[in-house]
Length: 208
Image (cartoon, rainbow, N blue to C red; front, side, top):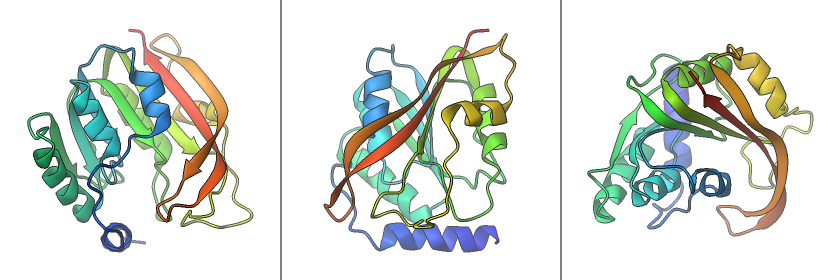
């Protein structure tokens, strides 16, 4: 399907939800990043902006990207209303066609899944290459299907973090895998329902 189809789909997903006043950061982001010194961050698939706003509140400067113009416009307004407009730059990117430029101390990609064509390995390889030495790439994927997920395919298979790392194909002399694990937690969906879910967590460190 085309970029136009993907844009219309994700605009529809976000437009169907009330704009969040205070979106929460993803749990795996907060637990992983809290002890890191703030710097330049790139948030891939920023959605409602909980991660970008949390990072900015921790003194990070964030470029937050999403294919949805609705998501980007809402995050821009929300960052301004929270007094974080100088630390959050929300921009629209179709990661299948373009990738943000620059050097980053942190790149995070939480639940970067889509029903449309996306070469995730290429996107994540690009993410690793924009890391500065000492920077980290945090990839958090679904490891189970939540009741509120847009994808309810009973035959879906979730690759392990090690499989994702292998697919990215990075030189181990430059990038090392710091974490690759499946973690469980109780999550709350957009409609308020709760369920136990599995997160696949991959943390890659650029050492050179």
